[in-house]
Length: 558
Image 1 (spheres, rainbow, N blue to C red):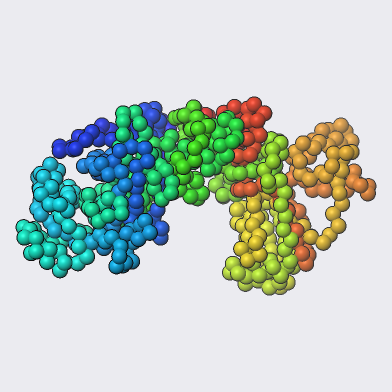
Image 2: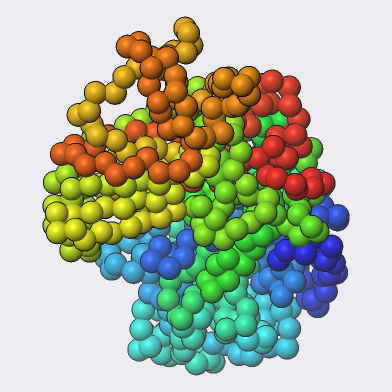
């Protein structure tokens, strides 16, 4: 979703007949154009056989489903504070989790049940189920049923019918069914089978009016509700349903240190919120918007006690960055090493507000990545390329090309047969990564030189090494003053006389060597906001809007 003018109206929950309690919904800011976010916690190869929840600040749960407008529709409630959602399979409680590996001494929950009958509504189903000690209700494709028992096989369920003299039928549900049990027991609370249309939703209840429930799940605490889907009849895809602000509260302290200035945290909050709005639905094929990893944004619920981060989110609630009326795609990174970069020089697509800027602020703080370097032998580079599928002979030269900002644009490797392989943009910064050799190129800002050549120390008066600092200025013979950081060739006074060096954009020329020095600064893709630069600006007294407008060209903040 990109159109910020398209406001999402919050639908009114329809109260179902027979509910045991007042429905619970997540309160979103009325003016937020993107009120709710679905965050994938476990999915794909990491999907779970069983998922435990513990109500940390609250009292029990509402069980139901989320409708097409992301509103929670409650079907029933339970006072149990510790519940587990299981795929309807024969599972065993081992080591605090429900798993399919058989264990003779473990609590077992079977996937065969005794259906007592179809009912007209929840109250009728609950009344019938209450006649049996192990009775419970089930909602399957819009119909209510009463069930009892859980058995490992059909024969066991049929034997129980005869032994208990029950009027009912043995059955197992479809491959979409999810069973809710009291954690650590075989006590079934509820069964849900919404087919392909609806997935089980679980919403924690507050213990008192005005309380915000918090739920433990797999060692982390979360706001909001949860959804459980058996995609293609498999294990459970687990999704956290939260308001946009609660989502951002779960991002900011993991993307930026809570110890940093409030204005920097506000800039991070607005960037994270806007990024989420642009990428809403990025994982729609799995049934959620964003994942909890760094491929989207790091999200870990409310596990960190960071009141200053919540303050930053609260004080910027509903604030987004836009460009010409649409949400801006707000990429950010740890540190740029001296300059950010145009989006098309890293990600191919030219985006008008993602323009490279020389960064005079980042050098005022310690990033930990002010400089880094690796030495590669020609044989190591040859092996790395071969391992990545390039059938090259021994590499004899590398030709780097740089952008106007002084960041890497491309690398061309030529082997002794004269055959070349070229890599540009983000691929240029990752092609030399090697787990075997323990080498990671940390950013787009690096150079490639002969590791064994004698490099003179360059000085201007007592200023120290020239490097590529944008704080250095040169005066030509006619009195023209130019910032050296703008790029080009400049002649400077060195310890042994004068030296002409290339600073900034263009090509560094072909480098032929037995050993290559790759040296750089910064961490990340260099597009958009530098988080350490935001910290430095905030420490200088800049407000979050000023920070954002420095790193994102021409955006509106509001």
